Image (cartoon, rainbow, N blue to C red; front, side, top):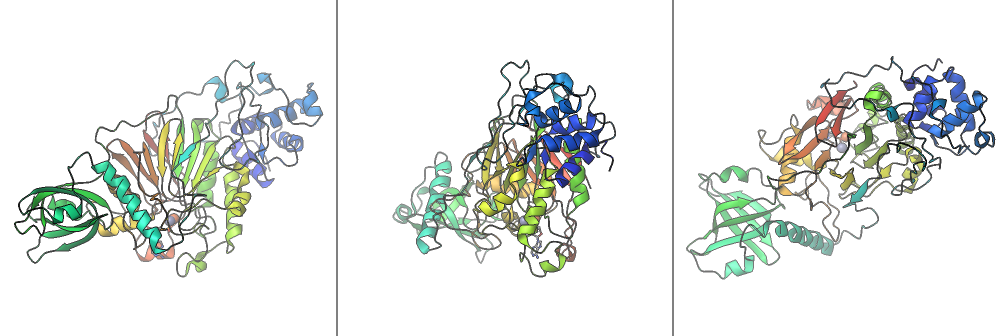
Length: 551
Ligand code: D5M
Ligand code: FE
Ligand code: ZN
């Protein structure tokens, strides 16, 4: 096979079991004879290497050119490659045309010299055998003029992994709802002068009153008004929202078990609160998101569904190829919000559409596809409802057995949901099963599959990624409610509904990232037309978003 393009080189390396750093691929593509260079590089790399580094390639090329390189000759694979001119002067390949972008003027800076050939050698030739959570240290050469551009290891909070204590008993449900109430009432407390339900019980009719509670029941009265029953740690109290008030428009967006505050007046018989104002925990309108202090981008994807007959391998390859191009040089992070594989036995009759029937084989194949992604990108992944972890949320990260299958990339493997901070920007990653609930319960104008980001806005407003217990979403009762959105994220990233949508809610960028699976028989039967083969790319320095299409 001729190996004149980075894309072909990446595939050939993946076939031989290697993931490769971007610059390593660029060097190979620019070699006089790329095929021989690939052979030499693979030869030079230590036997247990998973990732082909720039240093491996440099030493292979210098050996091929008969340049003195004692370290390479010794086969250690850690040469001190201080000479940038071992790199070919023009290593970018003109025939890797970028795929269509729906926004062709996507922001990216002109490549700086260290983007291509003259970059500081990355001396980190350690093989990535570290476990997720502790990515290998990257050390810049002390005598180098320019520091190597490297993504930072992401910081993660709110991850259940390793902290699950729930046994599914009654007491756990009490704990998790108590914690939800504590956290969300804390967010509302400054806005209303609330009283506990038990104290309201003792107040005289006509009193001004405020209460914070979880929505326990919503019913309409004989006259078409709404009775919203709120529950706090002391009891429940009914609250009446009359149909002619503006706030009546908010009742149709309430979900059971979410936390709200009301203000109003007690009825003459002191049996019900007439509601004047309704508050959600919400994101402040004035929220100022954090941004990166350099031009760097993250690709936000989800729902790869490897193992399904509908998995779009060609689109994925085009995406992975594009990541190796100059145009994608700033894309240093890849965030994957669940459903890596199609799984087994997720939905009725799913087996009829499986391409790979064994779940572990599905992850093996997924891992192969991940090898085509540049080895120097930081990858973060959370599980979804098709993945091989418990279905109930919060979902812990993949176990050791699955991690072992996916070691090639040393991805950061965390639970669903998790908040990941990269380059100072916090990104709340949540697979999105509750979006089905929000879309089913709220009126079409407020949440629909065509505008999944608007459904996400409601989760931000409720400051909870999956308010309603029961229904689609299964809740694992834990001591704490990991599904509360405690801190406002700068970016909210979900998937699951297989529709692309994005927008800003009180300055928070919400992105639902589409999928890599063509329409399934079920989706056809219910008229779901998935947005497949798109990669939303976020500028972490501006939070602007560009969507690239690979299908
Ligand atoms: O689900 C993708 C989307 O399609 C999500 O909105 C649920 C819906 N879906 C897909 N298959 C089914 C079946 N069989 N029943 C109900 N809803 C379904 P994902 O879980 O990511 O495949
Ligand atoms: Fe999915
Ligand atoms: Zn899903």
